[in-house]
Length: 65
Image 1 (tube, rainbow, N blue to C red):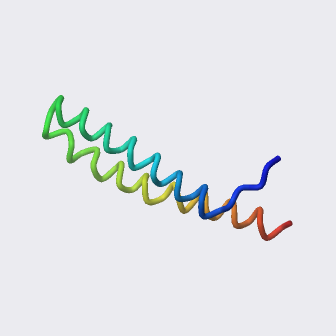
Image 2 (spheres, rainbow, N blue to C red):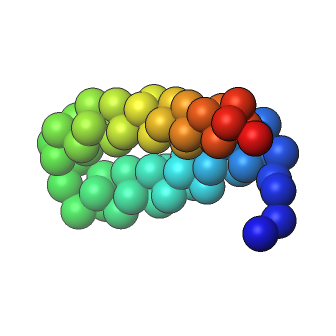
């Protein structure tokens, strides 16, 4: 298995997630503007938590080797 740089993988995860969230937000806003605020908090919390999970798992793998 190829070894990836932790920072590069984590930053790409953040970039991909930001693009996906932006597209979902735009789609929800075109459907109903009031729904946007409901999903805004959910998406923001998900985008904040997920990169931290990726970073912590990669860091634990790096320390064991």
